Image (cartoon, rainbow, N blue to C red):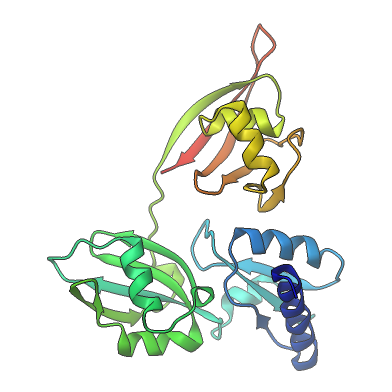
Length: 252
């Protein structure tokens, strides 16, 4: 089976699990490519489902299937969420990176699909973890790199303060075609933008696109793998020379 077929099989299994148990079921964490495939695949089913990563603007998310009696409010009032916020506090002497934390966790035998985003700050990091591995990490993740750490589960995701840094930029394009917008937003040559789009590296509002003439709506989130993400926030109108202008927030 291909990776896509394996993903579809997991989704089918979780749909049946939700229907049979009349309760929540969920996948493990999916990356942006897998989320795009899941969104498109699930359009053929009449299921209640949400993508959830714990944090605002999470990049890695799980798919949660909801029974008929449940709604989105039920999910966030539920005390039995399948993922929990995990805090890793470092010592005062270590300088640790995303790679350090991820390497230490995976070194304990934890697969990447069991973890969501890893948010770094001056005192350590916070991540989202599938509940089944969180307790194990609390007991066994005691060092990262050459430094010592203290790992514990936080009360809820609501207690996690995320500060996303971004810069604003005004863009000028001939049209809202994907190749033109991606080139302008990410400071790429037009040929490089075309290459990345056709290679499947560009996502608009979570959906992978491969056509360079795809028209990008305003208020869209645009992600280019390896280059980051931007949010188109303002339609600034047309210039006297007929060029479209818009404002973006580029996440740092």
